Structures are given as structure tokens and as C-alpha cells.
Amino acid sequence: MEFSEIIFLDIEENEDYLNIVNKVLSRCFESELKNKKLTVNVTLTNPKYIQELNRQYRNIDKPTDVLSFPMFEKEELDNLNNENYYILGDIVISIEKVKEQAIEYEHSFERELSYMVVHGFCHLLGYDHIDEDDKKVMRKKEEEILAKI
Image 1 (cartoon, rainbow, N blue to C red):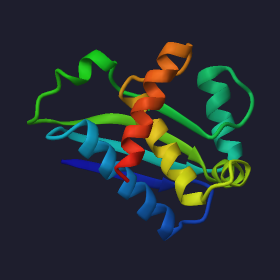
Image 2: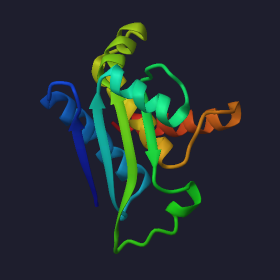
Image 3: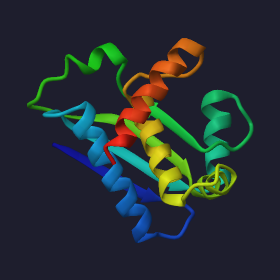
Image 4: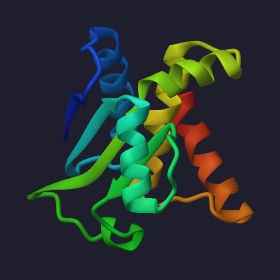
């Protein structure tokens, strides 16, 4: 059982975005965290806000597409009981960047937003792509989840 809060910050609310994010998160939980009571907060925003977060938390002063803020280390997730609710973490996505990348990679907005949600979710699970071996593991996990959508 999962619950997600989706926030529109400094962008116009959009029902299509809500539907995409909810559908993708549902598949993410179904695929990776069955029977856990978890909450994920997703903020859909603009490049200016995500740049502020990127500067504040990563010391990178430029906008990015997605940021994730996990509440647990990867090893801790297995030890969560099924009785309590937990916040898995926060995912922040720049909608403008999603639109740009959909054009750049020549696929639909829905596919790019779906990928951003899955990518952010994988970071919440403790996956990373700093070194090449970790990147391969994370990409494989992303592809497995995306295939179920």
C-alpha cells in the first residue's frame, strides 16, 4: 500500500501530469516495495526552483531534470516493518526540462516524465549512477520498471 503526494510548485496544475506520475509510482511500488506502507512526495516545478535545490544540496549551480532526496539507506529498506507508514523520500522534477528532453531524445512527453519518475524512485531505493558499474545496475532496474508500465 502506497500513498503519494504530488505538488505543483510555480507551474500550472495539469491533470495529465498527475495521471502519469500516479500510474508510474504505482508500478514502481508494485515492482519494488510490495506490502510496505510508504509515501513518496513528488514536486513538479520549474528550472529556477530545481536549480536552487541543486545549488543548495549538491553545490551545482545549474538546473537539472530530477532530484531525489531519500529518507533511508538502501540496506535500511529491507528492515522496514509492514505495520508503520514511512516516507520513502522526495522526488523533484523540472517539467520544462522533461519537455526539452522529450524533444531532444525524440520520444513522447509521457515517456520522458515516466522515466524521470522511475529514475527518481530508483534513487530513493538507493541506486546511483556515479560509477559505471552502479550505472549499469541502476539502468537495468529502470528498464525493468519501465517495461511494466
